[in-house]
Length: 158
Image (cartoon, rainbow, N blue to C red):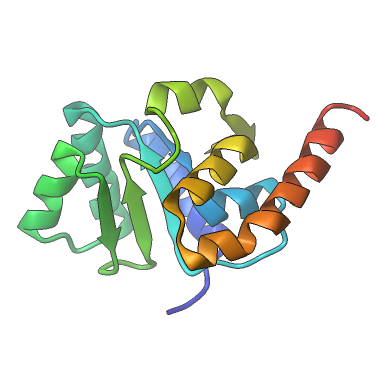
């Protein structure tokens, strides 16, 4: 499995915009887009959970080259909490209900845009990692929290 690359984020951004998908980058891929110095294996996307958005996601994924099964297409259209895709040009996780974030609308109000990428606020990235409670998430929390302090200071004009 290859590491997440910036060009993959660009492909997602551009194709999702073309297909009018409402989403946010989340997880470590979002942190990386904010400048967090780390790597990850996949792109994590937090889509708005509506049937219209699900259909737009299906169109975008097909355009990107994903070979979706009928079951995956149904899960995406109905907004299953977590859909992991490994049958395309890169690995992509669709997280319709991320741990630690109340809903898409609330996260959207706090999101930031970096080079045209809609990205969850660092506080939401950290809240989600903390709530997930996986070992790999707990191991990265200290570094993410330190990065959040750096990012907040850099973006507040200090």
